[in-house]
Length: 226
Image (cartoon, rainbow, N blue to C red):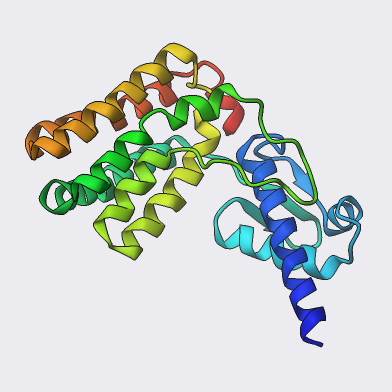
């Protein structure tokens, strides 16, 4: 019995990871409809684990349910884009204050080692669709580790959730020149934390996040997400 429960749990987690990956990488576009029957066929399973996964994605705001008609991938509004970036800055600023005050040299060295992971992530081909997706380096490892340094698990979860929601937007702004500059700013931010320059670090973080927001709202293809 325990083995069966473990197998079911693993199946749900595999489907969840794969379907979420499809949404975040825009292989399932905003507004695109899916049904339990279709997904059960794709993952070669019954509707029960599929339904469980869809409920989780609904709670995360990535899927919308239309009773009697199926499901659709959620869209992103301009108001949501603005709200997400403001919320992101509020969370990351709290982490930055904590890091400048408390981060150890070992933590700063590791943070700096993650400065260029975003560039590596975006120049690679997107992960291939699979019922069992291979683990990949998360986007925004630098920002996630900055949150981990704070030691606040609630803030960490909030940042991960927010960055996941912003993932779909990153496709429209991830040209190499911009990504390179953004990664250089990661390194500079780590150095400001080491020097305990809070004000300069806050100014850089605000500029860094605001640039992402500005590029999102100005991207010519952004309407594809509505």
